[in-house]
Structure formats: C-alpha cells, structure tokens
Image (cartoon, rainbow, N blue to C red; front, side):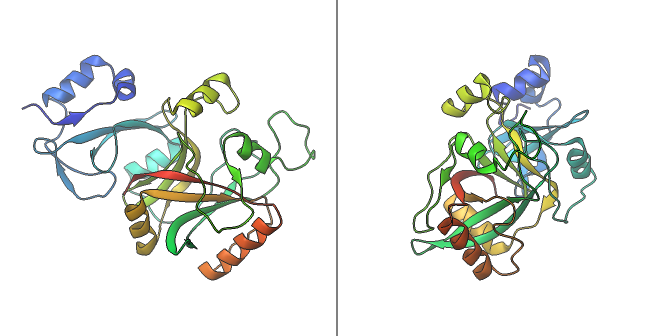
Length: 273
C-alpha cells in the first residue's frame, strides 16, 4: 500500500531513485513507526511522514518522523554517535570538536532558559575548552573564535535586552526529546559553496557541533523551544562563561561577557521536538 512519505531531494539522491520509489510504494517503509523526533507512534499510511537519513563515516540509518516534527533531510553525524543511537545509548553531556576549526579545543555546550523582553527563551551557551585558531594559522597566534563566528553571520551582543536575529540556514536538532546537534549549511566553512549555501539557505545540513551522546534538556527548556520554535545560541571565548550550576548565575555570566565585548549570538529554528 502506498505510504504518505516525504522523501526529500537530498535523501533521494543519496539512496537512489529505485530505493526511494520502493519506499513510496510501501515495499520497504513501515506502516507504523516511532517518530525519531518526539518518540511517539506514527503511521505512514495515515499521516504525512518524513524520511530522515542519518549518515556517519561508515554507516547510514534511515529513520522516520512525523512531517510536523521534522522535514525530510540528511543529517551528518559521527560514526560513534550513529552507532550509539542504534544501540539506544543516551545520557551524558559530552562535547564534540567544532566543524571548521582545529581539534585542539572542543566546544562545551550548556542549555538554559534566558529571560528577554519578558519571555523565557531556550538558549544554548557555547564556550570552547581552549583558544580557537583560524584554520591554517600558526599555533599560539591568538583566539579567533568570535571573529570566525561573526564571519558566519553571528552578531556581537552588547546586552541581552533584545532577541538576536535569525541566522538563516542554521538550526538546532532536537531528536528523541534530546539535543543532538547544531546544524549549519553544507559545504566547507569559508568555501564558495558554503558561502552560497549559507546565503541561500541551501545544501544538506552538516553538524557544526554535535553531542558525543544526546544531551538531556529540561522539560521547561523543551516546552519553551516547542512553543517558540526557535533556540538562541550564545557563544563566548574560553574563560568567559564557565560551567554555571544555576540559570541565574548563567545569566549573570552572559551579561558580564556581553558587557566586555566577549559574546556573540544568533537565533536558530528548532528542528524536531
């Protein structure tokens, strides 16, 4: 029986027309499934369903999601993360190297709610464990973390009085009720392809940051994200924020970083629930 499947052009290109047609015809697609985003049951015979292709270094896994939760897309993840998802390994708050920057530092990510203009916004705060050098730069040449982000469209923040602008082409991936990745447009950072795809919002998304294992978020954070469908991402150089145990302390650290010109931010659409 034909399925109500959405197979995106990028997914079709990856799996091939023959396999995509078999899915649409119902030969290889399940009728019922657990949505890879919200983890509630779905039925591809009764409701629009997205095909989501997770691709690691050696493994690819085709998953299904309610079309209202996720669009059909390719998500690039590490092989370790993909194997972990297959084994249903969850929990833990690992960090992962940022795409486009050297491996000597990793990005720590903290989630929290930030009050702006009278409303609580779900936020991610990103701070490296060390200085970030520009690709090809001589070691010890300084910290280019904020300039690199500004070149990608993040805006300097002088105060947290207003909501930052949306950075088109980027998104925050929440799947299975947990934080998986911050996605950017496809293409190597700084390349013409990346610049074009960033400007037009094109290209298969790739992970700029991804969790070593999916990160837990609070029910309040997830509820705010689902309500606003937008996540704020704040980034600061090493030593600016630190691991704050409470949201009031996190807000104070953000305000202090902004006052000293050490904070950039962007708003990103939420992918998933």
